[in-house]
Length: 176
Image: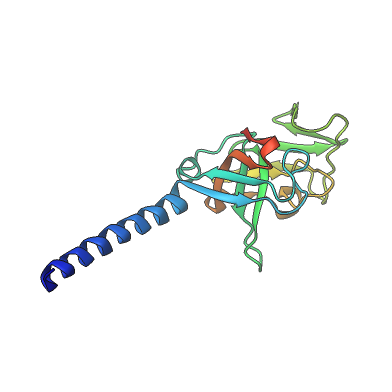
């Protein structure tokens, strides 16, 4: 082979590898990502070490719905990523009283929680009005969750994706 032919071949492979790496980077950052649950805040729905896939496109365009399980940047000193359930979206009024969550004046039906679960306010604030650009989130493990009761309302710009699939443990594979 001639040096020129080898150079063209190397150039071609470098271009292909660069395109594949670039595509993978874009796909991971803007379409899908794998995450591992850390901690008990979403029990019993999700457990520590569950492996999930999140979809990012809908949250990038601000399409966030009540009931979805999302991941978001905590903005704390460790840059932790939290996983919680969306309870309120822009325009909603959330009230926590007598162990219940009220959404726009109605008791919120939360079939994903074990029967008898109570929700305490965890702060002096028991009523939240969600402005445009924000959401209100709660962990499913209401007694052990750092969520909007402590963090306040979450800026939708901090939302990194919503859970669509649990892949591990294998016996609990499910879609959301």
